[in-house]
Image (cartoon, rainbow, N blue to C red; front, side, top):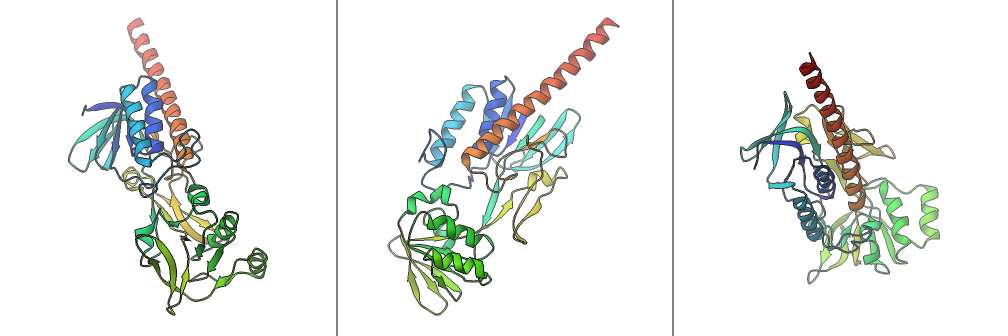
Length: 319
């Protein structure tokens, strides 16, 4: 691994690799440091990514790495511990003790899905415990779907998944009672409300089969929809003085993001972000687009700096 780079990208998912390819295609030296913990690893395929429908997440990333290598970019397997400013840009420290320098940083470390603390939820996550109809809805069409209500997003999820199946059940669990308007919508759409807290997800032969209530009753279901809390992976940015802020929906905190402008530029000059760390709702194709945009902006910033340096050197020679 070389010592100095134009750009170091922290995180090698769709956003990070897309940004890195954009930078490398502009003949910049770029290093991607990736911990190998993609958020969508449990999913069987990527969806709504034009031309890559149902691609395995691991295959998409492997292809991205190969494309980056074709333009001279590099990937280092590892975790970035911290970053600090130095004269020419930044010094990036990895957990294994390695350090590299970068003129600019692109951080694409994503978020953590904090799931409801119920037996079976984490084990089935991304398979038949779901949260996004655009990521997994088609795959559970016409199946028996349960909505596990833990917050304000549950009603929205119920309406979205009802578009995909006529057999949807709303488990109120720990959420407030639906409003009169919401209750009327649920009734009109044929979505029954099950009272009482949920105790666990039932699994038989590696297949979700039902939702067990605290009362002991089991309601047969083939898929369960939950609403995680989406928490930004902001450790590297915190070492630079940037912090995540809470995001609310209906007056309830649903997650956190790191603030940035529409190009991904943060309040710290020279640091950009892209993907789920900046946008809780970004799907894979959205994250890739954000990475491309940030990479282009980083290159433009470097071009401006290079031109300024060239002018200064020319003036020195002329003097």
